[in-house]
Amino acid sequence: MDSKSIETEALFRLVKQLYGDRLSETELEEARKGVERIVETAMELRGVELGNWDEPFSVFTPYRRRRG
Amino acid sequence: MRPVFASIRELSEAIRSGEASPVELTETFIARLREHGPRLNAVVTVTEKRALREAWKAQRELKDGEYRGPLHGLPYGGKDLLATRGIPASWGAAPLKGQVFNYDATIVRRLRRAGAVLCAKLAMIELAGGMGYRQPNASFTGPCATPWSLRHWSGGSSSGSGSAVAAGLVPFAIGSETWGSILSPANNCGVAGLRPTYGRVSRHGAMALSWTLDKLGPLCLTADDCGLVLEAVAGYDPRDMTTARKRYRYEKVEGDFKLGVPGDALDETQDAVASSFKESLRVLGKYATVEEVEFPEFPYEAVTRTILNAEAASVFDEFTEKGLARGLTAPEDHYGPYARTVVLARDYLKALRLRERMARIAEDVMGGYDAIVAPTRRTVASPIDQEFRKVAPGTAKDVMGAVGNGAGLPAVSVPNGFSEEGLPTGIQFMGRAYDENRVLSVAVEFQRRTDWHRRHPPAFKA
Picture 1 (tube, rainbow over the protein chains, first blue to last red):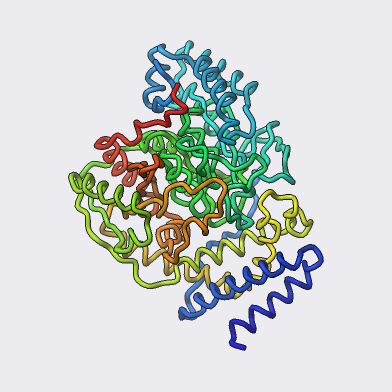
Picture 2: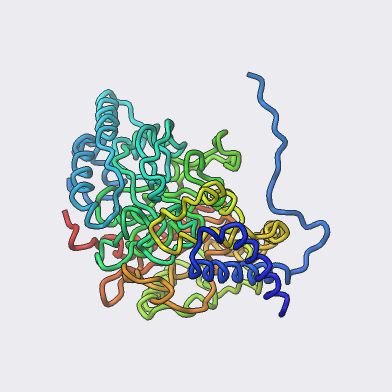
């Protein structure tokens, strides 16, 4: 198996373990396709190299309640 | 004064001159919401009691010489994901039908402050499409139709907002967009839809789908109207930490416009869409310089998709864990949320890191232009009883949607033609962050030179 298939199957097993009892066989197969798409998308991202200094584009602001 | 299909500017002038009154307008539009709403599946709740209370208040204020601005006394509808005190906000989802909040969303409060009158909560795709729907029948109110053909879809997820404005059931409506949910109904219903810059409008009190992608914006008959509504609702809100501390005033931008058209703008578009777009470029060429632009190779869709998947999985974690998805309308939404529960943290963070690079690429590409122009959608409205992918299969990427939403950029869509079967096509103008006035000015000039926005669905004439 290639790395995409290995990752897809591993993640799908987790979905099946957690939620398999509430999904039919057909629905589980659709969920497996969904996992496959997520892995494909992730692999596209992983194909782009980033530097150590490239931070997430989100701003965290320390919080302090204003004096009331 | 014929209020139905009149623009906000026209209605506002009629109110100021005494030619129309807030109470008369409210009664007119409530009657239309009740008469036509069910045919379209566009309306969840007609908020008549509250509307008449707000309309009488506006009428008294205007009589006393207190003028709040161009929305004073004007009816509107809000997407059913907005919290409205004492009025259900069901988020389009059967398991949440009748859900009521005890406060108003900030955008609703700001519209009330501007004197606007809430007449209806409007239909939407269940959970704003957050479960991965693939068909129009994905709401407990049923599939919403475009007023141009009851056999075709309104677009989504702000389905009722687009449909109600196009049918003349309200002069304007509020919708939301995470990825395409304002522009798609604007396209399918032939109205103007504005996706503001991320953080321009407070999200407080609106259902979250993806915190860093969600935007609220207006759907109106004209781009000019969108600017008037945006001015009323924009601005910093301490209840939403992501709102920008920038004051917004709707003003016309003068000058010679320079527009960019992506080289692949017409890839896999339907003939009618391509034909309308080519004709639009001819119109644009009369008042703007139009050049071809290219977005360099980059996983734009993967970045925005991963952020959306990961945030939606977290947003709806409790909903999913409780098994509530089983009660949703579209069968694919029953299992849709489970796959995205396994998005890895490393990939979500990688997407957030790549988002900055994407935003810089967009800024580089767009820096020399007032707007990037493209068809709003590659297709006209799809049949109301069919899955989207079966109607329009294809592999073309939605770079404009991925970049625009991922980088939080503003865009306005306006109608630019019709297909042979009478379905509208749309054109979008996307700008740099906080450049709403620039994209609106380009669109307003386009509408000054065309009359697509003056055509209304024959079955809903007043």
